[in-house]
Amino acid sequence: MDGAIITMKPFNLENKYLKTIFESIQDGIIIMNHEREILLMNPAAKQMTGWLLHDSVPYCSFCEKRTLAEGENKCYLIAREEVPYFLSDMPTYHGKKINVEMSTALMYEDDESNQKEYLLVLRDQSVKRKKEEARVSKLMIQRLIEAKETEHKRLAQELHDGVGQSLYTISVALQAIESYVKDDRLQNYIDEVRNELDHVMNDIKAYSYQLRPQSLDRLGLIAAIQGLIITIEKSNPFVTIDFLSNIENRLPAAVEINLYRVIQEAMHNISKYAEAKHVAIQLMEYRYKIELLVMDDGKGFETKRIDERGLGLQHMEERLDQLEGSFVIESTLGKGTKIVASIPKGEGFL
Image 1: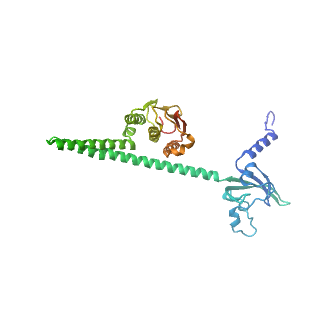
Image 2: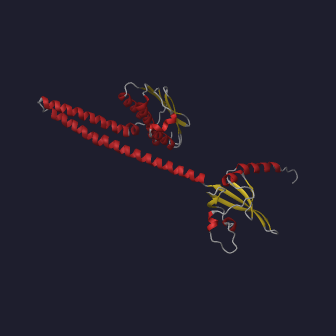
Image 3: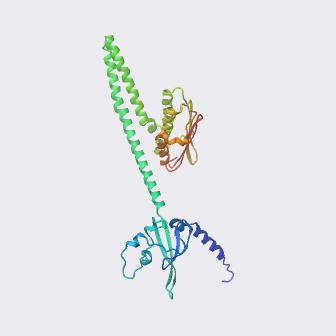
């Protein structure tokens, strides 16, 4: 065509790209002849199977067992050219079998000599299976956490509105009875009963709060954390807790409850093990993430022995994993511990 300029990639450049793809792709690529002799294979195929050039490609488990029609090729993919791919187990050099997705294509055919060359593509399914197992495991943990939180919420409500209100009614009745008591000995006994009743009511209130603070559902995460700090400082008067946050809006419910549980567990560990005098909690919202920092000046511990600290730290990590977040803990003997957690801001954030 007059005046037209056609630009084409150099042939060598195309070969360079094809060679790079052939050597880098994760799928196993094999060229074999009609006798199943390996003529060419990429590094992924060699690593996956352990086969070598000029080895014979073994038949998969399905082809070894299937019933053949007269004159039919034993290889199912070659015999049934309309089948794009299928799953089966393929023997490897060390005698084991790997589950692979296989596909074939006729690459070359010589009618005179009846020579044929086939492309065989192998895709290892073990990685896919492991990913699916991890996904199912994560989903199960999520469902267990959700069920646990639902039950905690129900029990906390029952303790507060049910048992708590009943005890309050008993306290009012006891107060009414006191107005008719003239005996000092009986009055002393009633005073002892009232003191015990007050202890029980305080315990019920504490248990209810530990199960699920009402401020978390009504007022949000920041109010719940502030209430937790007040409770801890009352029971641990020698510990000072500083709390800093720039969060102004409510976060998604799953984010609030899981972050609260992480902070609650961190404070429980500090109170029980750390012997700290000062704790700093920072909960900051950035453009793309929420970041939590908990630091104490306690005695610290060896992070290599972290599994010996019980399930608490594992539960913290599991909760953050449900939020697609990260969890890092650093500790030095005699210098304290630092926990850094970060979660990405996804759907549900304002």
